[in-house]
Length: 203
Image (cartoon, rainbow, N blue to C red):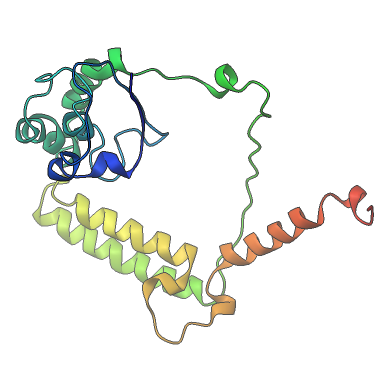
């Protein structure tokens, strides 16, 4: 009974996979990571390439792309996504961390806020105003669905500014003031390495 884990092998082409030995007529188990089939190349397509399920369940790769991959990835078709989810649900097992590793501690989350640096703030405002004009002009001539790429690009640029000015490939960016987030991360990392105040100075 072969057991396969989610890996880059799932993204290989059919030709590359044909060079790998495949036991025939045996039950197979395949595990997916937390990203499932929603990130990168459409992961559920690997079910076709790996022959994980019964032959013909999804048809040929071209049929799968036409019926599922393009409507979900390109058109964001919720009905197609739900139909595919129903079809693969009998083959998917999900476990919570509390079920498989109860000895692990609960996840600890810390929310930290910071303000943009002086160089970041004016660039953010300029890009925000320019993006707003571009989006409004696009919405005036195209539908919301067709304007989605312009909106996503604007959000990406704004996010890059908030993360680090060097992501914009600008000239003469001072690394010491390029990212408020990176500065804060350095402070938090130093505090974590030093340990809590009551433990400092102890061997």
